[in-house]
Figure 1: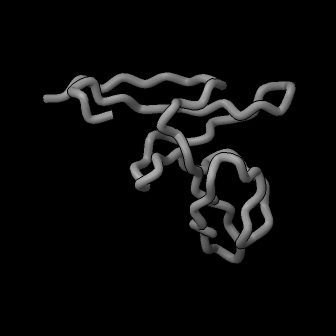
Figure 2: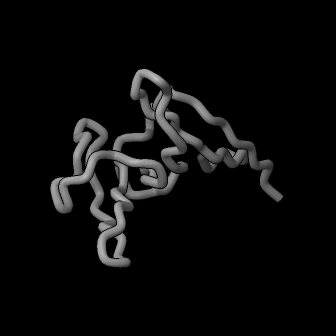
Length: 86
């Protein structure tokens, strides 16, 4: 059984290259995948918000955007599987 741990940090992981917009409009999630260099969704126009997914270049979900610090920096919550998989 893999050993799972979690960490919450403002420092993005090196393999955290994309985020998925989960902004909800009319009961539907946007679900657009974007590079970390983009702070606003190209599909719905919303900015990165709590609940957005942290993803690798190939779409593996690493965690979620938990909150923002007082300076507006994103605080990410990552889940680690300590068997070499993530």
